[in-house]
Image (cartoon, rainbow, N blue to C red; front, top):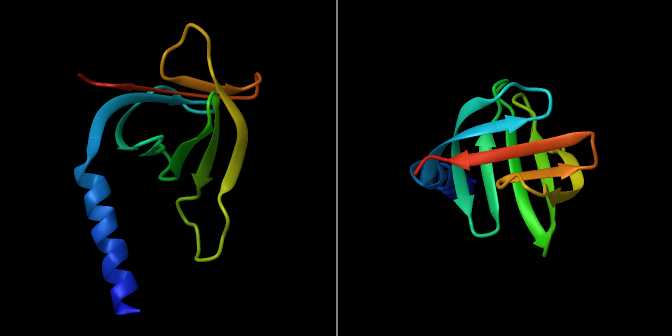
Amino acid sequence: MRFLTATLIWAAMVVAAAAAPGQCSVTGYDSFDCDVALDGGGLTFELPDGAIFAFAVIEDGMGEGYVIAADAAPGQPPQVLRDLRPVDGQPGCWARDEDYQFCVLLEQ
């Protein structure tokens, strides 16, 4: 158990160290400053209410989002947002129909 805990703490430190400052927007929130951790075909950032938003590209032009509640308990599954696609004319934005959209712009 100690090894798992140490590994999780180390992973959290690596993610925090690799975070890039940006501007995020997510359905249900106003635009907000965010620190975005990038990992190949995915990204992660904290929402204003303390929840964590994670996104992964699962195939060309298709992704899934995951919202992990700020007070999530072990074994509690995240909310899964399937079928997110890039939004035409809005770089950094992905949406699922008209009901959910998120955008991430990184500072350069």
